[in-house]
Image 1 (cartoon, rainbow, N blue to C red):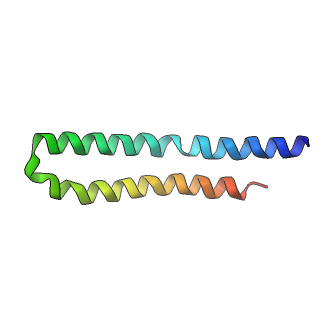
Image 2 (tube, helix red, strand yellow):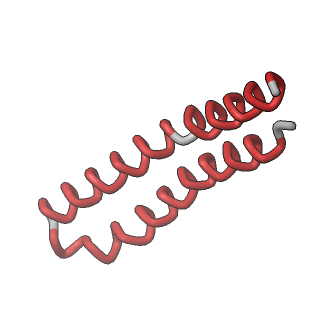
Length: 73
């Protein structure tokens, strides 16, 4: 029983800690993109694709944390 509890705590910590930085990064990416579009609305098309790519790369780090959490036995 004790080992199972520690495993669940380890999984929760892995996904919890591993998702903090990507969440902050995605928030900052979105905020800066909206700020840029607010300053120069004509550049919205040029800003959208790099913003989506950066968000996808940040999200991939959270997915790595999820994979690690599933790998803990």
